[in-house]
Length: 458
Ligand SMILES: Nc1ncnc2c1ncn2[C@@H]1O[C@H](COP(=O)(O)OP(=O)(O)OP(=O)(O)O)[C@@H](O)[C@H]1O
Ligand SMILES: [Mg+2]
Image (cartoon, rainbow, N blue to C red; front, side, top):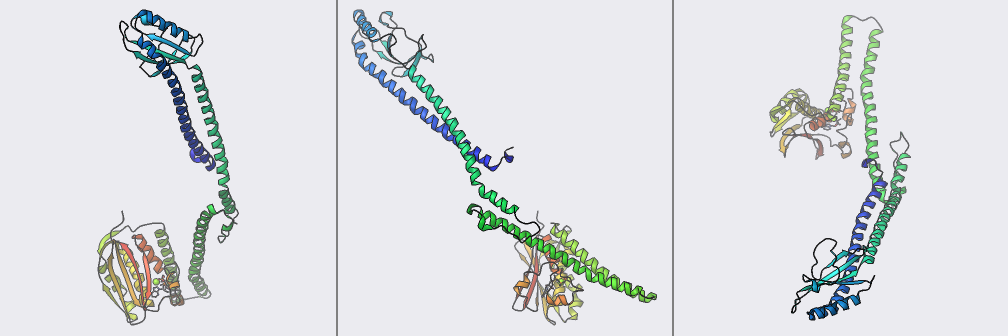
């Protein structure tokens, strides 16, 4: 439910809760201060009465003298007056007035104030003091009472006012909070209007940041960055579609052309066999492109290498180098291996990655040079580097080498045979093993390589 609440409502509720907490604290504080100060006043008055009257009681002890005390006290007590006095004693001769029970029923404690109620429901605040025994007179408790009905009424009305003003204050703060939140969220609505105004079908469009409020500017920048990433993915996809179509168009055109030529006249079996062989080659090339594309799309969807086994990478690399020996011999080149590492990898994929790098070296490195395959452990990964001597690769070109269908000029010249998928596959295989691919070109040495986790990630 709370998730569906708008931001403005949420902020208003938060304001209200905060206001409730603040108002409650202030109200409790004011209540305590008020009660304390009134109690202090009453206490002072009761104390004053005791200081005034206690000596009169203390000195009198005979019954006759006590009679005088009674007369004095009744003289001081008027009907409906604010003050009352009574004397509590075990000996009835020394009692005076009708002692009332405290509201809580607790016995009185000397110099503590307590509340009692009389028959007319008036509330009295009382304070007692024990007057020590003297002569025949036993110890008595002298109680002074002050009418505190008006004090209690004031306290009640004060509490009522506090409650009402607190409730009104909370409502007011909540309403103001809602209004402020609405006002404060205006830049967000502005951003949303801007975003909605972006024309569909044009990935180049961006939000006009200069129109945005400063608070929302960073959000706008992030939004534009997301749009830029979208655009580059979109362009890549567009380019990729065009590349696939382009790569498949050439073999398809060849196939159609050759088949039309074959059908244009009667052919003997040998001729037809040649044509079919040539068509088969084209079909195989197309099939390779499609298989490579499927492989890359699997890797991009997060498929991990599954058939893992613990192998010596040098041993496996040697097998790959042997397999490509003819390609190197053709160009008077030699492959040397350096280092070793044991790792848990998919052998078939490892061969495929290394074969892609080595066949690139056999194709693009200078004739008669040496190619070095270095295997090393780097942290939790193994690194395989293939270094050859060839034309320097400019940095701008280097950044694009791992893109699908990207080919350098030399490769483009033989575009029928090479599609620019080899390095993308190397990178995909590295990623499938929790690693990455890299390329470098320095001092006439071109280095291509990949890394793989030594043990599968759990
Ligand atoms: N060892 C290398 N030396 C110089 N350039 C290289 C080397 N390896 C790759 N390249 C450049 O990188 C480009 C991409 O290589 P990649 O292996 O992806 O494609 P390809 O070799 O052109 O085609 P494919 O591998 O699909 O047959 C190549 O066209 C080439 O320009
Ligand atoms: Mg290649």
